[in-house]
Length: 135
Image 1 (spheres, helix red, strand yellow):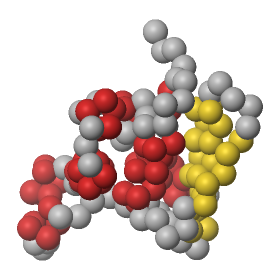
Image 2: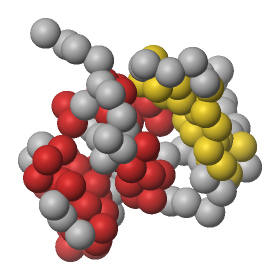
Image 3: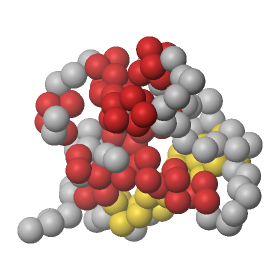
């Protein structure tokens, strides 16, 4: 699926796409013991939102890896940087558009993983903003 196809989808269809992309690989599910596969199929990866870590940078690396699952859609083509920060379950998204000078901060308190990624889509691939040339 590409950004143009996603733009034509309803919000619920986009959220389903996000959930599917974050779902556990079927090889992982089939290799797990003592887990009801039917329940696990409905689950997906979620951001580490506590803001606490046992090892410095651990949650930042994990959370960035979830964002990177959507890099092929071009989410990074619109920005100089995207940073997602969590503190006690509340998310803040920081970004700077590529052809603009302003730094933007978005309070995403109350959003879950799929909602945060959907909001990021709205701010990037659905935004109509200019994107950088990559060729």
